[in-house]
Amino acid sequence: ASASPSPPRLFPLVLCSPSDSVYTVGCAAFDFQPSSIAFTWFDSNNSSVSGMDVIPKVISGPPYRAVSRIQMNQSEGKEKQPFRCRAAHPRGNVEVSVMNPGPIPTPNGIPLFVTMHPPSREDFEGPFRNASILCQTRGRRRPTEVTWYKNGSPVAAAATTATTVGPEVVAESRISVTESEWDTGATFSCVVEGEMRNTSKRMECGLEPVVQQDIAIRVITPSFVDIFISKSATLTCRVSNMVNADGLEVSWWKEKGGKLETALGKRVLQSNGLYTVDGVATVCASEWDGGDGYVCKVNHPDLLFPMEEKMRKTKASNARPPSVYVFPPPTEQLNGNQRLSVTCMAQGFNPPHLFVRWMRNGEPLPQSQSVTSAPMAENPENESYVAYSVLGVGAEEWGAGNVYTCLVGHEALPLQLAQKSVDRASGKASAVNVSLVLADSAAACY
Image 1 (cartoon, rainbow, N blue to C red):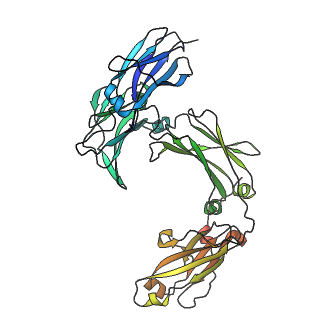
Image 2 (image 1 turned 90 degrees about the horizontal axis):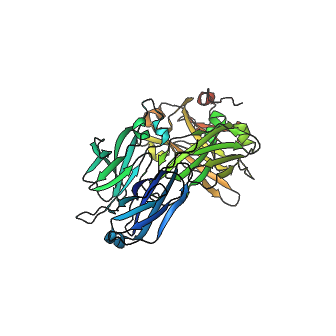
C-alpha cells in the first residue's frame, strides 16, 4: 500500500567540522508524501537568501527525504544568522531556525574542531546489542569540558581521553547507546565548551564529510609468507572515504567464474573523520599462483554507480632465487659484549617478495629476536634484490655452541625454501629439519 500523504518533519543541520572561511548551514526534511517540496531561506532580517542548493533533489521514497543548504563567506554568515529554513509542501509548510557557531573561540585564540561519529549497523551485532557514539575534538589543546545529552536531558559519558598526534591534540569522548535507543530515533548531543553537535538514526550531523573526498577502493595482493604458510591466498578489497559504512556491499568474484564468499571487516576511523572497511575472500594458493583473475565489486548508498577493481598475480619476467649467506658475529663483538649479531643475507632474487625465519638447534625463534630489512634494489638493470636479517644472540648462548639457522622463503626456490646454518665451532652450514617450522601449517585447499 502506498504511504499516506503527510507534511515534512524539518530538522536543522550544521557541519560536523566547521570551516574557518566558509559558513554553511542546512535543514533536512523527512517523511513527506507526495515528493513535491520547495525550500526557501531567510536571514535574521527576514531577507530572502540566495545561493541555496538541494542535495539531492529528492531521496527516493515514499516517504521522501530531502536536504537543503546555504553557503557564504564566514563573516557574512555570522552577521546574518540565525537563518530560517522554510519547506513548502502540499500538506503544509514548516520552518526551522538554524545557526552555525563555527570553530570554538578561546581566550588564546586556539580553535577546536569538533566532529561526531554515529554508530554503524554492524556495531550493534555484539551480544549486548549496544554501540558507542564518538565525539572527537582536534586542535592544539585539550577541551576544558565535554557534556552529553539525550533528547535534551543530560546523560553520563565515559571519561574523555586525549592523545597527541604531532602538533595536534586529539580528544575523544564516547557515550554508550543501545540498539533500541538508536532505532527509536533518540537524538544525542555532544557539547564542547558551548559548541553542540547532534546525531540520531534519522538525522546524522553534517551535510558533508569533514574532508570532501570520493569513495575509493584499492585491492591488496596476498603476501608470499601467508600463501606459503597457509597454502591459501587472501584477497583484500579496501573501501575508504565513507561517511558511514551502513549499506556497504563488497563482493569478490572470479574473473572467469562465480562469486566468492566475502567477509566484511570492522569499520576503521581514518584521520580525516571518514571510514575504511576491508572486504576479504580466500582462494587456493594454486589458483592465485596460476594467474587466475579476480574482481572486487563495491556498492554503497553514496555511489552513483557500483565500482570495480581487478587483480591477478603479476608474473616476474626474470624470476630468480636468492643466494643465502649466514655470517657469525663479527670479531669486534666478541670482546666482552653481552649481545651478539648473527647476520643472514639473501641476494640476487626477483620478484622482491620473501620471508626470513630463524631457528636455534632446529627450534623456531620468536620473530621479535630479529630485525629484517625490506628487499632493496641491488641491480636495477636486471631487477635483482637483496635483503638482510640480523638475529640478536646472547654471548653465553653463542659460546655454548648452539646452531643458528636462517630460513629464507621465496617463490623461485626449489620447494620455495632455502636454509643456511652457522655455529661457533665450525661456521659452516649444518643440516636441519625445517619441518619443525612448518609443521601443521601447510593446510590443504580445495
